[in-house]
Image 1 (cartoon, rainbow, N blue to C red):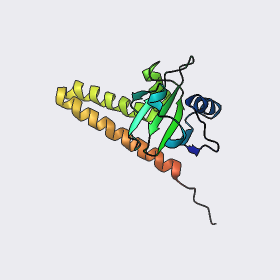
Image 2: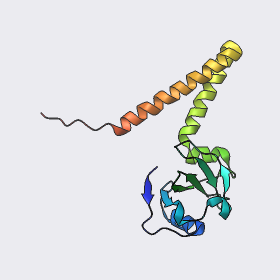
Image 3: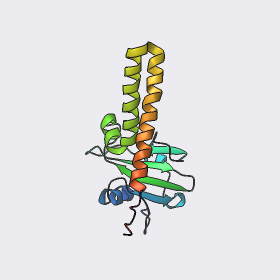
Image 4: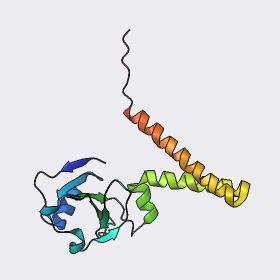
Length: 156
């Protein structure tokens, strides 16, 4: 996700939603806490999110198209983005669209657990889950390495 500090800070959560709706999905808007009211006071509910160092997560109710504003508390600032699919509308759709890495980890852990359980029972299921998470981690790490690899110039 990319972060952007608002050039002119929206003063209400309604204005924040409008700015995010006009932006690309998952664009993070960073708002100083002093510039806008607490999201809970404006109708957002406590939620959960992938840990990124935030102390709390809040979500505003979904709109008619099931999109939702997700607010993360980073101490002195709110980090805000628009979810493509609000988890209250479709949890699996939300994971696929807004948290695909989490979906990949969960899928590989489930496959590992099922496979291990069929082969070795309960203890095998636990080993399979751990193995699935390790495989997902390796794929994630390999993908990050490929994405950040700079091409080597041919000096010949």
